[in-house]
Length: 233
Length: 233
Image (cartoon, rainbow over all chains, first blue to last red):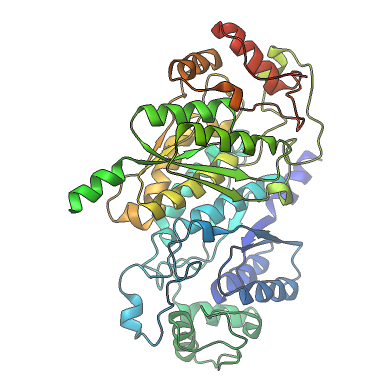
């Protein structure tokens, strides 16, 4: 009986799901690997609240076990174009986008998100957490690098009652070594409907097509040899 | 000029302040060490919202630079008597209180709180974070142990733009090796007014005197040789 519970728990995974291209593909991969998905989305006062609707649509399309949308207002902390009043840059080239740490960096965001995912995982008896970070296209974000993920995993097993009692929390980063184009190919192979996802940094009804995120997405679809099913302005 | 900014930044500290005895003493110690205090309090749907009023009173009495009260509803995650509907145990002996991981354990709480403190520190250009954990009286909480704090510190310096660019985030735990009685003696020496603090797990107007937290507090005041200035039922 105890073994059965253990087996069941080992199939549960918390998946950080923003509704964007990467996290949605990550959720599709977790599902394909046989995990029972507990999706976790943050409503953190970001401009693109449109993403949350997308997260809900993606979660439904994947038949997740539960989808928790947690309000966490990081605007009081600020210091980023995604939560503050700094202008989102438009029409930058891919080279400009790729250089340095982006203006859209949110301080310690993945540390915060993963810590809450860890709490959620512990409370439902899960040991697996999925996050859609990639070091290929997001080299500018320190908290998307493998060194950070490993350090977080180590910390996680010391931070929790379950960890101390023998659970082994694992942070899964199935996109770690994939380019944006490879991520899209993978998602399409798994039947993910990308028209449900959202990437635009601006909060319009249609994607702007001009912010860094839209430009990277469009270039990646082109490179992958598919057309983006999302509507653009 | 750059050096001056650096010096100023090095005196800034984010202090996690719940309004309880430990975090209030920690804030008094940070002040005595010459830090400019940015207090951070979480309103996390806990029963003892009374603590938040205490945090505000303590912050004011210490003349902090800024006090950020952040709403973070962990009730959706649950799994603890402090945020859930599990009954707070009353009238337990000190031996019972000290054994095992307490029912009031909140999953990964310090990992979450420290991650948000880290984001706050990065956004104001601070490298120092103070947290009032002690391994002496809180051996039951895994996230109060030095191994966890060290692992968190390591992760913090990989999680942030500032860390990657050369900042050195430090988690200060001035209470780490102090018993509750020693903490009180230290606070009284620094002139901290303990009538402003709050420890009771129940949300009444006066402290109950019967929950684990009240009992530990009263025993500690007795052991320290002082009388608790707080009103009890």
